[in-house]
Amino acid sequence: MRLGDILAADGVRVLSAAGSKKRLFQELAEMAAASCGLDAAVTAEALLAREGLGPTGVGNGVALPHARVPGAGTVRGFFVRLEKPLDFDAVDRQPVDLVFCLIAPPGAGVDHLKALALVSRTLREPAVCAKLRANADPAKLHAILTEAQVGAPAGLAPDADG
Image (tube, rainbow, N blue to C red; front, top):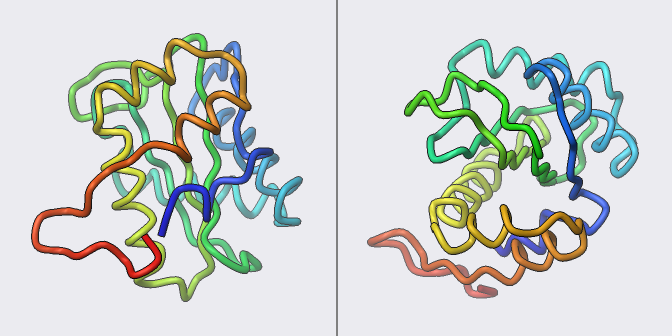
């Protein structure tokens, strides 16, 4: 699996300000609705419910909100770079400006976990994050993310297609 498999060019945005996690999740849900035909209200509620289980701010200004949403046909990703960082209750207490959201069908299982691991490895790379923060063009952000080369986690071989 590659990020290009789950992140479409129309799934990348730069927002001047989100104001709150709820507003950000609404924006992400609207992106999913436009791209995948999902119900925006159902998607936003699923993201909020997942966030209620524990914050998805993983540190270093990165958040990885994710949810399983009825009607999703496959695992899809949506990326937002916030011009004004948002408090996300991250593990390091730092505000978040890079948000990669994953939406998966209820039965995605392993594919959802593989996608989450791939996104996590990619956004753990300081050079990738620095490039994302230095660019405001959604097409360039998409290219940075989909061209990033990250290795498989220790003990795991890359997929046959990767």
